[in-house]
Length: 257
Ligand SMILES: Nc1ncnc2c1ncn2[C@@H]1O[C@H](COP(=O)(O)OP(=O)(O)OP(=O)(O)O)[C@@H](O)[C@H]1O
Image 1 (spheres, rainbow, N blue to C red):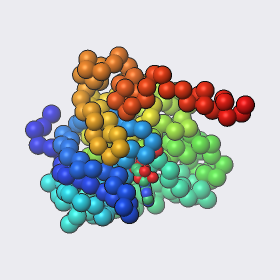
Image 2 (cartoon, rainbow, N blue to C red; image 1 turned 90 degrees about the vertical axis):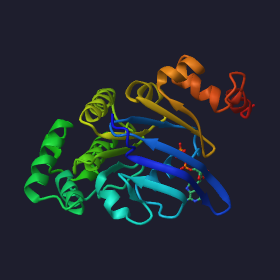
Image 3 (cartoon, rainbow, N blue to C red; image 1 turned 180 degrees about the horizontal axis):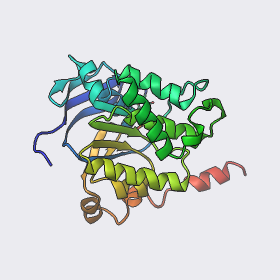
């Protein structure tokens, strides 16, 4: 692993109106790392990701990707990144081939390479027989697979996945886990946001836990286990303040009485 960080985040803060949602974050991410980015609802994960992908241009602090400043040259950075958002709109009247053609052209891919790669990826994801069907007939998981393909089609150096397993069946989840590990072996840097703790535990070589806009844990799963609790779920609960004695479910059931 190289000693030069691929992504450098320095004193990053972000507010929406008067609400401060990222508080002075500083992070170095190295080439080939698989980062599992976890945290409670509303902690600031998607906001971080949207800043890293150039979707939120206004923030305080500095973000450098491959030495390029996000403030001054977001277009150059976007070429290096593949992003699979949490809630993306697919153009459902299109077929997967048409959609991937559209996405690949945004990345200036050449026709021949684009078509052959789109076709091979669709087949690898089990959608070979559906590649010319309109996506409005697709199940949630099939759409999610097309989205995943659209995030890697240009062979980016950095892959950012925001809850990529949503809607996928158990076989597809295994496939994505393996894919993340293979992509990392190929030298890709992966930034993976998820609430699915057992998957994060398995695929990440570094876990970042964000709570209320601050990174409160940063390390391998082994080191988090040693310092806090035996499963990532328990580490999460312990560090984000959910007490085992919390009785939310009682309160929910009592609300009916
Ligand atoms: N466009 C916006 N305008 C105002 N507030 C926002 C906006 N987007 C996010 N927020 C607020 O910023 C905070 C962080 O949101 P963010 O979406 O980054 O959280 P998250 O960690 O991704 O949560 P989840 O796990 O629920 O997806 C939340 O309090 C949210 O209400």
